[in-house]
Amino acid sequence: MAMAVDFSICLAPAPVTTLRGVGRPEAAVVRRPGRNRSCRDTDKVIALPEFNYFGGFFFSPKQSFSSCNSRPSEVLRQASSGENSSDIAPERGDLLQDELLVERLPIGVIHNKGDVVTGKYTIIGLFGQGAMGVTFEAERSDGEVVALKAMSLRNMKGWKELDLFEREARVLKSLNHPGIPAYIDYFQVDTKDDRIFYIAQRAAKGKSLEDLITGGWRVSEEKVKDIAIEVLSVLQYLGDLRPPVIHRDIKPENIILDKETGDVKVVDFGAVQDVASSTLIGSTVVGTYGYMAPEQFQNRATLQTDLYGLGGTMLYMLSGRPPSYFPQRRLKVVFRDLVTMSPELANVIDRLLEPAPEDRFQSAGQVIQALQEESRESYLVSPGLSNNSARYVQQTSAVRRPAGAQVELKRSSNMLEVAIPAHGLTQETAESGAFTVAWNAFVAVWTRSAMAGGGPVFAAFSLPFWFVGLRLAKRTLFSTAVAIKLEFDGPNFSIEWSIGTMWKHKVVGETKNLRSIDVVEEKVQDPDQGYSKRLATSLVLYEGSNKHEFGSGLQPEELEWLLAEIKSHLQLPS
Image (tube, rainbow, N blue to C red):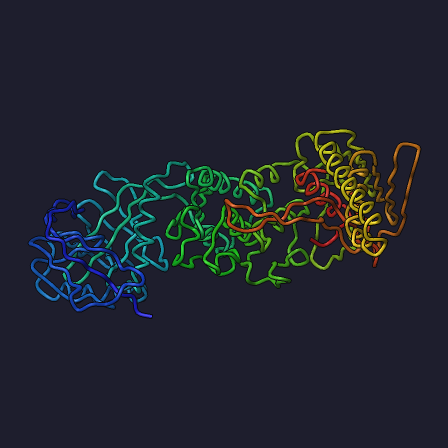
């Protein structure tokens, strides 16, 4: 579908951004390509003398042309059909590298070694090439080495590319973090047949993780954690901004490591987006396959989107393979039997790579805590080692124990004991109990009235409500008075429910029959994120065809922690 470009003529003076004083604020106001606007023959632009800047584009003196349904290159061709050379065009020097390099660079942004841009930046090398530009190594007139990202208007496939480029410049200008190379300048240069947009940043010393790994560098698990924590500090900073900022393209190529100093930098904010605009219609699908979170394919991005990319990057550092190399099960990357790592780190990466945003860690700070949590002992998950033959040792899960948790855990090399005390009379149980009493009292009055007025048949309609009332009563009783004890002792397990010495119920079984453990959840609407999120209410342990539910009344955070602890001990699949 062609995109209509609407240029409207306004003869009144208006503020206009100019190119280093070349343009003047005396020209027409030009609107950007708009949606649902009809194409008219009268949609034209009239540029006044000099190079004036209209809504992001320059037009040469006294030119008028139709821009309806035009691509950027077509608009540029029409706009620059006359004599249009600029006195600030780059100078030429020696070839940067070889002819093959020059051939694969986009037309219109090829710089040779020694080219001088705007009299301030001398091209001395090439950092890399992305989807929407080429990043050169340049030296400023004061001797500082910078990264100069360039994008050609002639080579653009659509106006959205320019929007993203300008957004990157705006966001970089507002950021201030040691893990992000500092913004220097944003400007544009006219050549004889093109217009080139530039972003200048301080150069990040070191090499990308992509280059290091492909070059044969092998990294320890502790180093992976250290690098991840540095990246997470950047993501935490971006998430704390108002509105929060989402990078949307976290991958090994965009993480620079200085091996001498250990400094880590996050680069290439070309896909950056703030949360406030992440759900707008018409947003662009950006990212790199394998490192893109599933929601990005639906033009959505949340604070958890960058965490998915980090999980894929950590997996790449440990395996040398991108996430797309590994098999998937229900959209989730399956890697545990293919990569050697501790279960502590495997649990973290597993949760980072959850397909649903609400199932991942909810913030960068949570991941930092999980990575810094010291395990007392750990074991290795080796390729080819099945869950049943894995040796059990003392360990902790990657999920941090919530503050104020009342659940008690005891461990030995092959035993895990969980004690969930009765909650007693709390505000929550009191409110639940009051509601239960009111519900059952109402149903009792209704049933009695039905029996008196309509007989047993009419009263039978109250049975479903009695069923709900009994479930409420059971849930309130269990939360208030019932203590639970779970024991996983080598090949056997047991679960015991008790109310003091008055009542006890116990089930026993063999550990090998335990298929999985999961949370019982209720869906609630999250207005901030715009989608339903699941809230944990209890846990259920699956033994063959039997289900054992426990943990009702615990907070969702405590349930998630307990779930991770039991899964980690039993080596149950996530």
